[in-house]
Length: 355
Image (tube, rainbow, N blue to C red; front, side, top):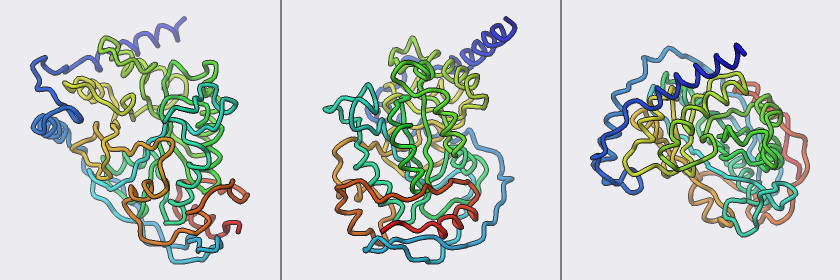
């Protein structure tokens, strides 16, 4: 009973914060995708006034070695570039946005062949392997938050894999494929759907977290009704924090889309989140858009050429096997993920790709 009462008070506190500072009804229309440019600029200026504190984080990783697969599918050791130091408030990070990774209803009971949201395992692994061969390194929500608020160091080609909506294919398929290449992802969960029939379970999420994945909220159940914003933004945060026992600091707008008058951004920025994501295509993540960060939505059927053109860093070589991907990839032992750069690079050097 005591825990129940504490949860009610905690939920009310967050909901009150989420309900503050709602924009005037006369706010100009056209926010982000439908908003006029001056409205977007005004919102950026407002958010820019929320200047993060002076950086206190310092880190000096030592360059080691990593793998660059050649056209034959073998691996060659080359010096790893020194990690890049970023000032507080800005970093170029390539954020990918997926809904589900599934081939059939056995992997995800909500699977629909005609849905553009079900990226196949072959498509997904070809994309992941391309990034791996070009020297991209996956990062997490907490790493991006640290950079934007404190500054620090990131690998030279940071990529962030994000998955929305609590789909089971994220555990069944995305998790082992990323693990195979020593990468991790980030889940944005509907709090109401966790542990529900045909959705990802809390235990599956905990297993992914133990392997280096991180979580945020994309709402309670995804309702677009403004009357439900408090539940979607505030209560989902409370539920997930209680479920997993850690602060939920990142939010993803359902479908990556914002409302016309910017009310959602105002509520999220006042609900104790630190960052939030849209689906605006940009890699330049800054403190001016802490609650409007960019992501690239990837759907089923995206050609390899179209995917490659999205990559912000294209220099390097991709193996012929990857470019002509048509069969399941060669089997190799997963690379254990670690957020320690030196340990990760050492594991990369010790684990060559199978031919």
